[in-house]
Image (cartoon, rainbow, N blue to C red; front, side, top):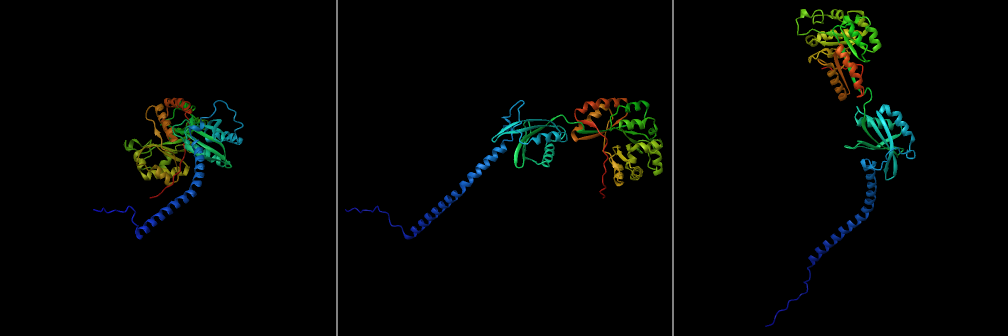
Length: 404
């Protein structure tokens, strides 16, 4: 039997298949050519960009702790490195205004070589970011420019920057809020009040620092030596006023308080008890009187009296519905800030006010005048001076009425 032989040669591809394979081959070659062409255009530019980016990255990363690794210790002669000698003199001149307590010049080693490194210790009491902004503003008006200014948390010096002049780096700066606050950084307003000024109290006034306010009943303004002591010690005098209160019957309040039925002349007779009041007083301190403070008519009659004399008002009644400040605002009168009252130990009250001053920048406190509180203030003032707390005059604020 004859066996049939099968051919091993490939069968001829139909014309349609040949056309499809040719199309795919041409498309593949076109895509490959496109990528080759794009690569030839992309890689030279990418390499240049990479080199520039790498150089900028090096400059930026050097403003962290690594840039100071090569800082020489001790007294290094940096005269040859100080590229702009006017900078040292400028920082010396601006130091008090910018809160710079101390300054050290050393060397920071970077890729371009050594640069003068100014280490600044700012005084506490003002946020570091605010210090840096003040420094930047002061330097910019004199031709310098801070650049790459950055915070560096959890480092010894939490701020660093480069300093440019005429588009050239002249120095590097770093700083921290480390030094004790300067005098007057925190302002404490103190008011002493009394229902009866005695001869021993006059002696205590001789020990008060300037800026303390003293609130007295109208009749006590005629006390001898009061005017001289207030002028010599720089004390501000105010009239202590008590309004009608709901705690006692009206018949028991007639002599010492301003009542709801008192008209303008009656109020003036009680507050302006002597000519010394109009000559020495600068305002009134309303200690208490919840019923009178809530009455809009009495508040406006008080405001009219103050407006005639250009006085201010301190509302210390602690009455939430008080209309005294509203009447003062409507009459365009000055208002003193709310104050912390000291019901117990004056030393403890002063310390609490000092802590609030350190937290908020300023605070106010009212203390009853006696030998204990006077001694507490005399001991308190020198102790807190190192903390940047000082006795300051009371600020008078003028608020505008917004209407309804």
